Image (cartoon, rainbow, N blue to C red; front, side, top):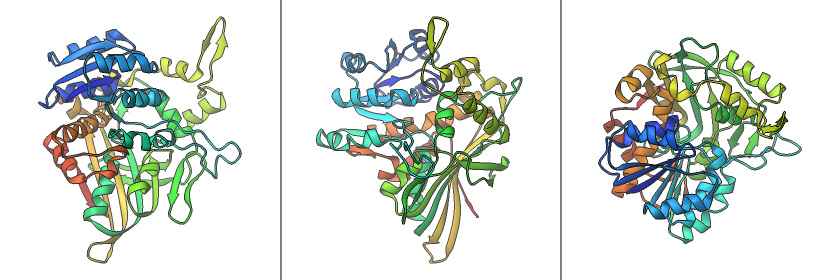
Length: 401
């Protein structure tokens, strides 16, 4: 397998460190707008299979030229969601398999944003599904941790634990702290603003997809392995758009453990217009307010040495179990920052995101996963994925509630 990895930031850098320990990649071209960042990420592993290159992820022709030059048969997108569609189209045109960890951007309903969805996450990609299928190519979308591993958990529950699923409730929480900072997000603030300030989407069988106000329906969820109770709220996320396409469930939700302070900061950014991606003129320069916010905050990839605690991603599944009785379980994956830093030199949140596309790539390389079209993780057998994830040294867990 010859891979073009676009994006050498926190997640991209962790992908390189994980993939370098595996035998399946024949070659990995690490491309970034910042050539120095790509070179630094490649130098960190000292593996001749890895090569650095420069590319503008928005330039489809340039991406296509890299695919051809290095004879890459896979494009792995580790950029932010703004670049999903140009990379998605470049992979299709170049005859490559495509993987990403976040899907094409949504746009709220113009008149009723807190009742009805407008353009949903992934709609632009699914609109091209027939073209991918006709060409016999695979686009495996949403294969990070959330979306990604959470969707694999949902597939496992449907196939092995439940006869009927009433709700698939993705719940994400952590007890991470960053020493020396009053406010330092552990993941891309650009993506976090996009997720948290857009209208959250909920799925119900009788109603289909509908939206609510940001941070709605708060609940306290008790996370495992010492993390404990965290208040979680509705947030827009791809799982709610992916799971109902392949799994029969009466309801699908996503709630994120943000905390009151984080929510207050996001609300303030929104009130001030600092969440906007529309450029404003400052002096003689045009700049996006959201990009300014991102530039003012520390790079999440560099916070690992200052971080402590654990992060948890998982799905609470309720319904009727195989024995015919009511059942509720939480399938989860916990990463301790101390472990990910000592083992891979990557902070917990980016490592937890990065490991899943590498596992998926290995399954595609061996033929354990196969498919054509635009498919989510739910379209594949969960067992090989969960077994291989455990073999990578990062086991998953299940709690009966």
